[in-house]
Amino acid sequence: MTRRGVAAAFAVVLAAAGCGSEAKPEPEPEPAVRAAWSELTLPMPAGAAGRFLPRAVAACDGKWYIVGATAGADGATQPAAWVSTDTQTWTALTIHADSYYGKQNVIYTAGCREGRLAAVGGKVGGAHGNPRVSTWHQQPDGSLIEVKARFELYGGPVAINVSRMAAGPKGWMITGNRYSGAAVWTSADSAKFEILEDAPELSSDDRGETWAADVVAVPDGWLVAGGIILSGRTDRDPMAWRSADGVTWQRTAAPGEAEYDEFQRAAVSGDGTAYAVGLRGLKFGAWRLEGDKWQARARFGASSGRGVLSVSGLTATGEQLVASVSDGARYVLWLSPDGGASWRVVEAPAAMPSGASQAVSVFAADGRLLLLADDGQAGRVWRSATPLPG
Image 1 (cartoon, rainbow, N blue to C red):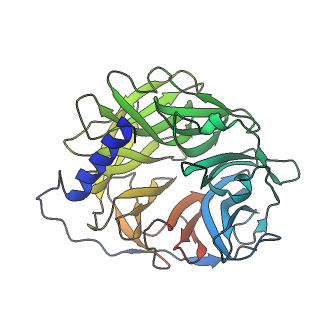
Image 2: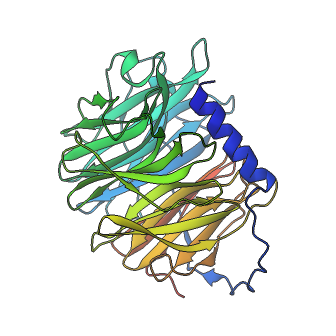
């Protein structure tokens, strides 16, 4: 494990063990928000069988996309994606996979612009058991094709991970991490990506080790959210980076505290306001970007004491934020009606356990909220209208 990985793992262990916990009594929780969930049906792609592994949603120009995979009874996976114009009726896209691992990809993040989808998938494999990453480009006929790329573009000896994708007016961006710290991959058309690593401000330097977790398009370019382990420290502080062109980056730090804090997911509301949700000690926390400074908003949730806290999804619709988080034992949906200033639990349509084979994500646009959940036995998708009550 790299020095960065050791420090990050040690910091998470400290957080899970209870360092930085608060002694203040917790207020009584408000009643859960009751959303009007309706379950959606996805068609099984041609030639596939077994169960669904829904992972992410993207929407633009009247089209909605769900990406993920299917898994057979033997556990073998193959990439899958679906499209809809009303979020009620879905059609499976044709997938053209080229490589050995591409044919087994689980597509886990996507971006959409001008009605066209691009996505990223991966499959653990090879001598070291690292994810073999592929990107996917949509053809004029609607099918998805695997983009050929040299192994070192996403993998190789300096690779750490490939995290999240976003689409914006200037194309597509993927964020992730290399041995040198936070990195991004950019493309104007999603047919070919180029990597930017060892970039000033974005990468690690003598001030600390950077980590990128998410990326979103903002009105003036791009925003990458993550954290930094400052020199001489073992815990992360929240950090974000802004860029107009995807090449030159500026840091926008949030006030750190004497505990493990970091941004894990970011979202942008319709008026262009950026938000982030991540860890704040043994709780989750929200931040809002005001000008060039992050303002801490309310904390919410708590550790179950049975695993590591994580944020799996964040979406913004007007002043409402909806986050999906894991308390270590289960996934929980939270709603903030006021831009992160207060939070309430949203009643989920089914149990959502948290574990190595489980996944949950949320996405809202055009007055609709989609919830994707995979409990390790079955993948399901639900829809609700927004704004949510409460």
